[in-house]
Amino acid sequence: MPRISRNGLFVGLMFISCLTSAQDPADIALKQNYLRANISTLDMNDNDDFSSFAMLDSVLNRYHLYFTGEQHYTEGDFEVKWKVLKYLYQKAGVKILVIEHPPSYAYLLDHYMEKKDSVQYNQMVDYAPEGTKERIFYRNLYEFNKTKPREEQIRVTGVDIDYVKVYSTRALKEMINQRADKKEAFVRIQWEVGQMHAGKLKADSLLKKVAAEENTYKDFFGEEFKLFKRILWSISCECEPPSERKMDDPRWFRREEFMYRNYLSLMEEFPASKMYGQFGAKHISLLPASHWYNGFNWTSIAAKLNTRDSSMAKGKVLSILLSYAFEWNSPKGEKRLFNTTAAGQSFTLFKINNANSPFTMLSSHVHYLININYGEEQEMQYNQENDTYNIMDDEQYTMGGPVFGYQYWDRGVFSAGTEVRARYLKENKYLGGLGLHFELNTKGPRMHGYRLGMWFGGNIQAGVNFVYNTNYKRSAFFFRPEIAIARNLFSVGYGYNVTLYNKYLNEGINKHMLIARMFLPWWKD
Image 1 (tube, helix red, strand yellow):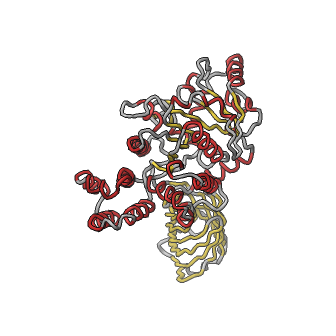
Image 2 (cartoon, helix red, strand yellow):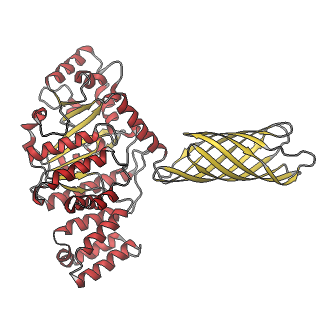
């Protein structure tokens, strides 16, 4: 589930396009009066009281698929997801939770729910620290399910592309090993899937084999045959995640179409089952729109499901947008309407699409809106989550930019240059980097230099450098350990020069150097 940075979020774009155009006081008063007549303060406590959702009761049976649209990892998201899921279970008979993760990941989570396997569960959510809302959500779902027979439990399934492929390996191994008694087919299919994971057979080639011998695979996987195919689809894409900084990246559109295809497979597998999913807000617009997603022609999963003839849910998709109070602190205009009308309540439901709704454009894309107000805590959490991710969202990327240093030699020398670093990250943690630096001394001996260095650490970095300086007549080669304090794209450091070779005649190299760096990022997409 690639995260979405604030600049790329559908919510902000939609509100800019939908809400900023009308500044007339009479129009704003009309809209506020409408909101006051279509409002419900929601009880999001973990209980079975759903009376505050009564506004939705009369419309639920019109729909087959239900979406809520969030900003990922923002305070309030999981409270909404849990309460809405329980509400839809009781009022609409929803028993399938669709998550913005690959089918393999969802299969393993669902396996945990069925087998009560805490070891399996901990492996699945090892990226989410103990006590976080995501862990609490799935623990709640486990407790909810364990008192019910399997046919009455909430199943978890996923529709996203598997970019990492770790979970697909684990899920397919689990699915195949459960059928070890089907010896002849077991050996063959185990070998074929093993060839795929070893890189000797592409997933799309295996899909062709499955299509050619469908009965063999159907007999082997039984009721999980369609799931097996969805897992293969999820790894057949063979593509990198879409760029968070290029909203017209074709991979966004490919991903959306892929998830739509998986939804169709789910509806074919469970034709009578209603489904609920909480996705990133950009995925829940009910209609295609050129103004919806950074000005590009964007058709969300919900729009595809709601408008295409190939969808069994055409015209039967309910969409609820989550809005966050801290985003709409503008001192004037409509941006404050939802928050001010909610009057400080933590969770407030608004009906957007009544026949007399003045929110003409917004109501064509979503039916309802939940305003979430957690105050400064909500904004702080959102900024921390997304600032970290915005800077470090790829495992590898390069950074480059100007470097300024003051080298305290016999007379003091100011140097300026440029540097490019290749940095390696894992799980959003900076592990190290390798850099090449060119500098030109602007005071003292006119020289240019080259430095090859390695750095390790996060905000406090340590590095080792090998430096060669020359002006064609004189030259020196020395080793420089360095320590620096880094913050975002800036760092200030101290280096100590150890001379290995010196041909500066009488001009010795003193030992100390202060260095300031500013990096300009070039991300690997």
